[in-house]
Image 1 (cartoon, rainbow, N blue to C red):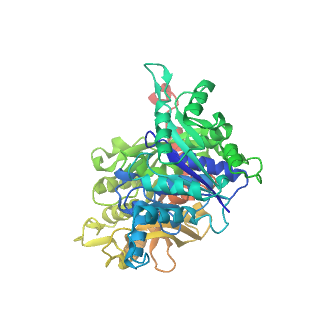
Image 2: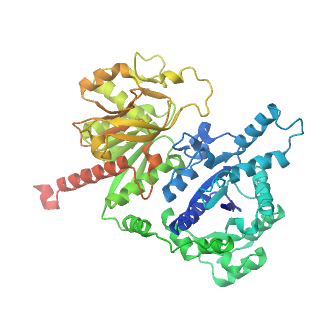
Image 3: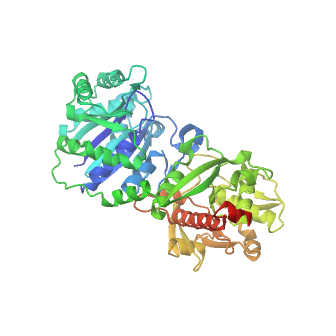
Length: 549
């Protein structure tokens, strides 16, 4: 039977429950255990698919087409395994299931209540991944913070499982904050004490406290926390701020978080942690040989989590190329023909990000033109690829009205159009083209060179596509459709063969990039940016005297 670890949080949100859960899972996996992680979110939305990125960051899409919380991206990046629909559950999905059962008469006329009906459904979902014997340990991150009204049913479900299952099969890791008050020059434990007290009042007692802190915790502070929170001193784990999230597993290894869990759960069949690949990645990440500057052209740049998978993909690709990737956020809404050179001329590459809606579209098109004309490495993802098609149509092919029907339903040149199967769909949630689909790549193309294969699968999240009525015109003008879906003919990849690196993809390669398997397109893009930077450096005068000559 699988063991279950629940990760809760207190004091404040954004402490890093997802990173702690992923780090613990990575350590257990490195010791030879089969591990998975799931996220339970307390909001009433059925999934994050309809949420504005400003509300909840990016919407992460799994291989099987589930729109999920961005923490599942961390899980996949750390563990290098796929998650699924079952790995993300929301309050909305729980209530939807229970209400559907009630409508079908499954409760035989009983009054449907939070306890036991909602909590029973939560427990069923919590145990689901561990039932088939595939995993030794199932980690469950409970979203929100202890004390939130929305989280109460989930915490109650954990309490019931602590009571129902054998003691060694369930444990709770509670993440809290130990703030450092500069005025007093002291670390303060009261927020942690109150958080644990609040959790204990629900009937759930934590086995381990992971304490986020900016300053080291000495033994006196650890002893005080252990005494007042009723845990062993060794179970008070210091979680110092790290320079990168990928250092956290090594910090938790040093604190013996994994060993404490293994002992508590009475797991004995484990070995020494094999983290050689992870450490090799960290060495390259921390000691790069050069630097490139990439412009991220988007319209949600105020919130870093809106492009989380893209930013992490740059980290992975940078390590492979042994370069530091400095990302410069450029808001597409403020790019104009007059200022585009000023905003973009110092960059080594340009990524035009995905998104929805009309805001900032013209700025993206102007940025694409700058990269095309100046031979700057260009990479467009989803909407970014569509903007490249529109820009090429307008400025190379003379289709001055070229546009997407998403932004202009009356355009006379709808080079980007809604997918046929999407036209009758009225409901917004979970109805896009989602999940992994195959793509056949043309031999000898840039995409073929980057992937080293002619058949791939990548994840999608879109309603609009390249309009194949214009395909022959585009090919004749010099834009190559180098990747297509073998069943529908959907154009998946476009590129310009006469450009150093110009490629756009309808899918989202960032969603499959991990520490151990970086996304090939990001690796190729950063390599091209590196060459572009080297070329610029070689063209610069080496001294003031050379400049005068």
